[in-house]
Image (tube, rainbow, N blue to C red; front, side, top):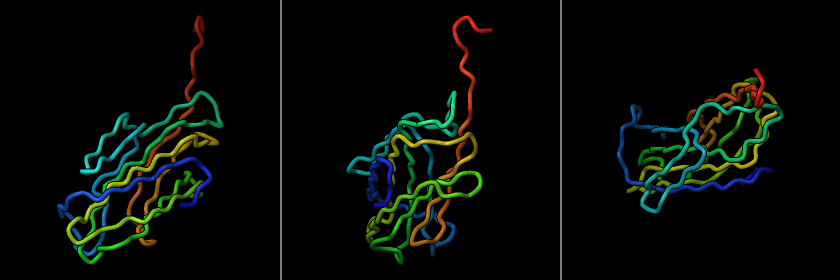
Length: 158
Protein backbone atom coordinates (compact mmCIF):
# COMPACT_ATOMS: atom_id res chain seq x y z
CA UNK A 1 0.00 0.00 0.00
CA UNK A 2 1.44 3.41 -1.00
CA UNK A 3 0.90 6.50 1.10
CA UNK A 4 2.72 8.84 3.45
CA UNK A 5 -0.34 9.31 5.70
CA UNK A 6 -1.45 7.02 8.48
CA UNK A 7 -4.19 4.80 7.12
CA UNK A 8 -5.82 1.44 7.47
CA UNK A 9 -7.65 -0.17 4.57
CA UNK A 10 -9.94 -3.08 5.32
CA UNK A 11 -11.86 -5.13 2.79
CA UNK A 12 -14.44 -7.82 3.28
CA UNK A 13 -16.47 -9.93 0.90
CA UNK A 14 -20.21 -9.96 1.59
CA UNK A 15 -23.14 -11.94 0.15
CA UNK A 16 -24.02 -11.60 -3.56
CA UNK A 17 -26.99 -9.63 -4.83
CA UNK A 18 -26.70 -8.51 -8.45
CA UNK A 19 -28.49 -5.31 -9.43
CA UNK A 20 -26.08 -3.92 -12.05
CA UNK A 21 -27.42 -2.28 -15.17
CA UNK A 22 -24.38 -3.53 -17.09
CA UNK A 23 -23.74 -7.23 -16.41
CA UNK A 24 -20.14 -6.78 -17.66
CA UNK A 25 -18.67 -4.34 -15.12
CA UNK A 26 -18.04 -3.95 -11.43
CA UNK A 27 -19.87 -0.94 -9.99
CA UNK A 28 -20.30 1.03 -6.77
CA UNK A 29 -23.53 0.08 -5.03
CA UNK A 30 -23.02 2.96 -2.58
CA UNK A 31 -20.22 5.17 -1.29
CA UNK A 32 -19.98 7.99 1.26
CA UNK A 33 -17.71 9.68 3.82
CA UNK A 34 -18.07 9.21 7.57
CA UNK A 35 -16.20 10.06 10.75
CA UNK A 36 -15.71 6.36 11.37
CA UNK A 37 -16.90 3.01 10.04
CA UNK A 38 -16.30 -0.69 10.47
CA UNK A 39 -17.15 -3.86 8.62
CA UNK A 40 -17.58 -7.06 10.62
CA UNK A 41 -16.78 -10.63 9.55
CA UNK A 42 -20.36 -11.16 8.33
CA UNK A 43 -20.19 -8.06 6.10
CA UNK A 44 -22.34 -5.83 8.35
CA UNK A 45 -21.35 -2.18 7.97
CA UNK A 46 -21.53 0.29 10.83
CA UNK A 47 -20.90 3.98 10.08
CA UNK A 48 -21.05 7.04 12.31
CA UNK A 49 -21.08 10.71 11.35
CA UNK A 50 -21.83 10.62 7.61
CA UNK A 51 -20.89 13.97 6.02
CA UNK A 52 -20.20 15.84 2.79
CA UNK A 53 -18.57 19.00 4.18
CA UNK A 54 -15.58 19.57 6.44
CA UNK A 55 -15.50 22.92 8.28
CA UNK A 56 -12.32 24.59 9.52
CA UNK A 57 -11.63 28.00 11.08
CA UNK A 58 -8.19 28.24 9.41
CA UNK A 59 -6.00 26.78 6.69
CA UNK A 60 -4.03 24.65 6.30
CA UNK A 61 -6.56 22.45 8.13
CA UNK A 62 -5.73 19.08 9.66
CA UNK A 63 -8.67 16.67 9.61
CA UNK A 64 -8.10 14.01 12.25
CA UNK A 65 -10.36 11.19 11.07
CA UNK A 66 -12.20 10.59 7.82
CA UNK A 67 -13.41 7.28 6.41
CA UNK A 68 -14.34 6.51 2.83
CA UNK A 69 -16.95 3.74 2.77
CA UNK A 70 -17.93 1.90 -0.41
CA UNK A 71 -19.69 -1.29 -1.38
CA UNK A 72 -18.70 -2.72 -4.74
CA UNK A 73 -20.51 -5.36 -6.75
CA UNK A 74 -18.79 -7.42 -9.43
CA UNK A 75 -19.69 -10.04 -11.98
CA UNK A 76 -18.74 -13.68 -12.28
CA UNK A 77 -16.24 -12.74 -15.01
CA UNK A 78 -14.46 -10.48 -12.47
CA UNK A 79 -13.93 -13.21 -9.85
CA UNK A 80 -10.48 -13.35 -8.30
CA UNK A 81 -8.10 -10.58 -7.31
CA UNK A 82 -8.81 -7.04 -8.48
CA UNK A 83 -6.68 -3.93 -7.91
CA UNK A 84 -8.60 -1.13 -6.20
CA UNK A 85 -7.03 2.34 -6.47
CA UNK A 86 -8.38 5.43 -4.72
CA UNK A 87 -7.11 8.94 -5.41
CA UNK A 88 -7.88 12.06 -3.39
CA UNK A 89 -8.03 15.04 -5.78
CA UNK A 90 -8.61 18.76 -5.38
CA UNK A 91 -10.98 20.88 -7.50
CA UNK A 92 -8.27 21.36 -10.14
CA UNK A 93 -7.87 17.59 -10.57
CA UNK A 94 -4.50 17.46 -8.80
CA UNK A 95 -3.86 14.13 -7.09
CA UNK A 96 -3.11 14.86 -3.42
CA UNK A 97 -2.57 11.26 -2.34
CA UNK A 98 -3.52 7.76 -3.42
CA UNK A 99 -4.19 4.37 -1.89
CA UNK A 100 -4.07 0.87 -3.39
CA UNK A 101 -5.46 -2.44 -2.21
CA UNK A 102 -6.18 -5.83 -3.71
CA UNK A 103 -9.76 -6.98 -3.31
CA UNK A 104 -10.82 -10.56 -3.97
CA UNK A 105 -14.11 -11.54 -5.56
CA UNK A 106 -14.81 -15.27 -5.54
CA UNK A 107 -17.57 -17.01 -7.54
CA UNK A 108 -20.00 -17.20 -4.61
CA UNK A 109 -19.36 -13.73 -3.10
CA UNK A 110 -19.26 -10.98 -5.70
CA UNK A 111 -19.36 -7.96 -3.33
CA UNK A 112 -16.55 -6.15 -1.59
CA UNK A 113 -17.00 -3.75 1.31
CA UNK A 114 -14.34 -1.04 1.51
CA UNK A 115 -13.52 0.94 4.66
CA UNK A 116 -10.64 3.35 4.01
CA UNK A 117 -9.61 5.18 7.19
CA UNK A 118 -7.58 8.33 6.65
CA UNK A 119 -6.02 10.06 9.63
CA UNK A 120 -4.42 13.48 10.02
CA UNK A 121 -4.84 14.62 6.42
CA UNK A 122 -3.96 18.29 5.88
CA UNK A 123 -6.09 20.33 3.47
CA UNK A 124 -4.12 23.34 2.27
CA UNK A 125 -7.15 25.42 1.26
CA UNK A 126 -10.94 25.45 1.17
CA UNK A 127 -12.57 24.01 -1.94
CA UNK A 128 -14.17 20.97 -3.52
CA UNK A 129 -12.41 17.62 -3.26
CA UNK A 130 -13.14 14.11 -4.45
CA UNK A 131 -12.14 10.52 -3.90
CA UNK A 132 -11.90 8.86 -7.32
CA UNK A 133 -12.05 5.05 -7.39
CA UNK A 134 -10.64 2.69 -10.01
CA UNK A 135 -10.65 -1.10 -10.37
CA UNK A 136 -7.82 -2.47 -12.51
CA UNK A 137 -7.22 1.12 -13.74
CA UNK A 138 -10.85 1.41 -14.95
CA UNK A 139 -12.81 4.38 -13.57
CA UNK A 140 -15.41 3.16 -11.09
CA UNK A 141 -16.85 6.32 -9.52
CA UNK A 142 -16.25 9.24 -7.19
CA UNK A 143 -17.32 10.68 -3.87
CA UNK A 144 -17.22 14.48 -3.75
CA UNK A 145 -17.09 16.70 -0.69
CA UNK A 146 -16.34 20.29 0.32
CA UNK A 147 -13.83 21.80 2.72
CA UNK A 148 -15.08 25.19 3.91
CA UNK A 149 -13.69 27.95 6.05
CA UNK A 150 -16.00 28.90 8.89
CA UNK A 151 -15.72 31.91 11.17
CA UNK A 152 -15.65 30.92 14.83
CA UNK A 153 -17.24 33.62 16.97
CA UNK A 154 -15.36 34.38 20.18
CA UNK A 155 -17.28 34.79 23.47
CA UNK A 156 -18.51 38.40 23.69
CA UNK A 157 -17.93 39.01 19.95
CA UNK A 158 -20.92 40.38 18.00
